[in-house]
Length: 73
Image (cartoon, rainbow, N blue to C red):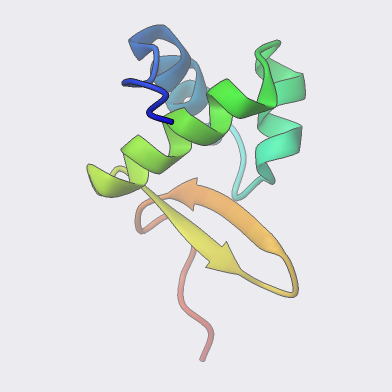
C-alpha cells in the first residue's frame, strides 16, 4: 500500500514550523499547521530521509530540525 510522495507544501510547512520551536511531536505539528497527521507523518519521514529533520527519542518521539537539539551529555 504505497502512499506516494509527500506533498511538497506540507513538507515546507513542517520545516517552517520546526524552525519556530526546539522540538515537537508529529501530532502537535499537524495541529499547528492544519494538516492531517498522516500527511505530516509522511512528510516528516521524507524529510528525515533527506536529513533535514531528525527523530528524537526522549521518553516519547519528537521531531526537530537536524542538529537543532544538542545530544545529551
